[in-house]
Structures are given as structure tokens and as C-alpha cells.
Amino acid sequence: MGMFLVGTFVVLLLIGIPIAFVIGIVALLGILNIEYIPEVTVPMKMMNGLNSFVLLAVPLFILAANLMNSGKISEKLVEFALAIVGSIKGGLAQANVLVSMMFAGVSGASQADTAGVGKILIPSMKKNGYDTETSVGVTAASSTIGVIIPPSIPMVIFAGITNASVGALFLAGIIPGVLVALSMMIFVYIVAKKKDFKSYERVEASRFFKLLGESIPALLTPVIIVGGIVTGFFTATEAAAVASVYTLLISMFFYKTLKIKDLPKILFDTLALSSLSLFALAAASALGELMSYYQLGILAQEFFTDYVDAKWVFILITILFFLFIGTFMDAIPAMILFVPVIMPTAAQFGVDPVHLGLIVVMTLAVGLVTPPYGLCLLLAAKIGKLSIERSFRAVIPYILIVVAVLIFIAFFPDVAMHIPKLLNPDLF
Image (cartoon, rainbow, N blue to C red; front, side, top):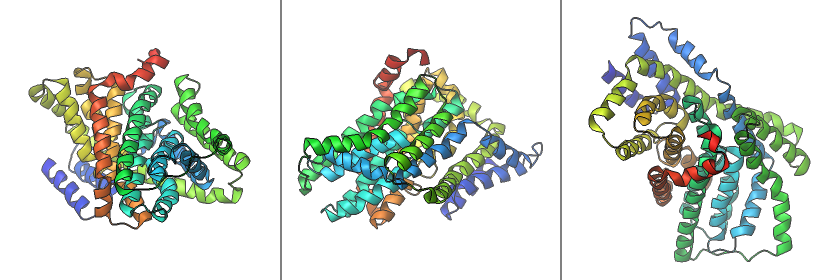
């Protein structure tokens, strides 16, 4: 029966059925063939999977990102990023990476980053002499920073699954996110020198401080979110609600770029995007019940006990596994299905849950730019009007950068853990 279900899963994927429906169909077929589990288990598990206060953070963070894009806050951040790094060789591409860091601190959703920043910067880069491959590659790849730098929706989900500290996960993501961004900017500089991409003139001090003043309200968002969570002032879900309300207020009353009439469309777009992730999560909860019946967690633990005798080997296998899973599955259902399977073994090897969460989230971030799933790659390719094949070739160097930082963080965890241990040792 197990081979039949695996075969069904693969065939449905190959014929183009969306992954959320594939997971649900396999869960239903598997449970229908188990005599002692009633069919009603599937919808019950799907509903129970969504019955979580933590999961409210998903649509709320997406709402904050959509409010940012509709309120034209993204454009303000792009202007400010250009003022900071525009004078460096390949200034527009450098600003692309930097603004992804800024956007990451507000939304926690990489797809929103690709859509919001990509619509502004991909046409602008092409207009300023950048080839389409570079424009699409930089935009798609830098969007992966969105799930590494806090706040991060996948980190919230991981914390909900494992009871790890959301605050510790958020703080642990700061250094890896900055390392990824700096590494990408160094690579962009090398490419810009080779292809002779132009830079902008250094902005005058008065102009710089004007842009800084305009950007400060948006840049305060991650300070409010992370600060509130780490100090215990509010939960991750409450932080997402605060982020949404705060973004709405500054868009309407500070920037004055958002009108009441814009809200229905923003809410509709938020519900449409949220429903994709949440339906996949619900289906994964049903499939998780099937995996529990077949005791995959125990089988995985026995495998690692019998064949893996070193912590570094376990970490390497975990990275390779989630790199593969991320190519065809969203981070949220991937974590719902497989994190409970590897958690007992991780505890056995003494891997800190926060460190494991960081490894899993960074690994699955690569899946955002790898086909066939690669949502950020698909979005950037569509905006740049470039084929998926050429877009993927353009993004490969940046994937290698993320993987290099990932491996460094995986085997030198103290680098990532320095900030959370320094700011709040009680989290450990």
C-alpha cells in the first residue's frame, strides 16, 4: 500500500495537479484503505490542523505585506536603498538585495517581496542596461531573505509544531539573513564589474536624510514586532496583527498613499494567497495522521540509530532531504509533515530546536527559487518576461550562496545563536 501511495503522489505531481490537492488525495486514499480509521478522519484532521491561534499569523503577515505594496511603502524603501548603495558598482542590483532585507523585516513573506519589489525594480533594471537574466535572478534570489530575517512565517509555523521559542528563532535568523544579503551583494559587485553595470551618483546629505525620515516609520515595523515578541509583550500572532494595523495606519495617515476604497481588493488578495498555504497545511495535517499510522517517525529514528552515528551526518542528511522536498512543496506543509518525523532524532543527537528550525527554514527557502515549485522564481520570471529555464540558470549562483551560508550556520551554530543568547538568555 505504501508503494501505491508514493506512486500516486509522484504521478499526480507529474501531471500537474497542485501540491495541496495531491497531499489531500493521497491522505484520503491511504485512510480509505485502513479498516480501523473512519473516512471522516480526513476532514476532521484538516479542520483540526487549522484550529490554531498561531496560524492566524499567516494571513495577518501576508496582509501586512499587501498593505505595504498597495501603500507604495515598497517604493519608499527602494528609494532609500538606492540612496545607501546606489553609488556602488551595480547600484540598482545592490539596492534590490538591500530592499529585500528591509522588506523582510516587515512582511515575513518572500512571495510578497518578489511581487512588490520585482514590479518596481525588474523593469527599472532592464531600462538601465541590466540584462533580463540578472534582473530576474537578483530579484528572485534576494526574496529568499524574506523567510530568514524576522519576522518569518515559516519560523512561526516551526515554533508552533515544536514548541520552540518564536523570539529565539527570529533573533537567530538575523545574522544568517545579513550574511546571505552581504554575500549576494559581493557577488553582484563582481558581476557588475564584469558586465560594466553603471552606478548612481552619491546622493547629497540633505536628500539622504529626507529619504531616511520617510523610511523610518516602515523600518520601525521589525523593531516593534521582534521587540514585542522577545520581551513577551505579545505573541507572534498578536505581533502579526500589530504589524497589519501599524502598516495600515502609516500607509493611510503618514504616507497618505492608501485609501479606504483600496481595502476590499487588498483583503481579497490576502485571502486568496493565504488560502493556498492554509489549504496545503490542512491537507498535510490529514496526511500526517496517515504517516503516524505507519509510524514513520519511529522508522526514521531507527534508521538514524542504525546507520548514522554522528550529529554532522544527521544535519547533512536533513539539509539534503529538505532541499529535495522544497523543490515541489511549500515550506508550511513540508514542515507539518516531516519536522515531527525528525524531531526525536534531532533531540537524540542534541540538536537545539532553534538551530534545527533555522536549518529547516533556510533549506526550504532555497525551494522558493527552484523549479517546479519555486514561487519566487515563477513570479520574477513572469514579471521579467523570461522563460523558467533561463531564469533558473540566472539564479543558480545565488542558490549556491544561500547553501554556503546554510552549511556554515549548520556546522557553526554559535554564530547564529549569538544574538538570541546575548539579548535574552532565558529563551534557552
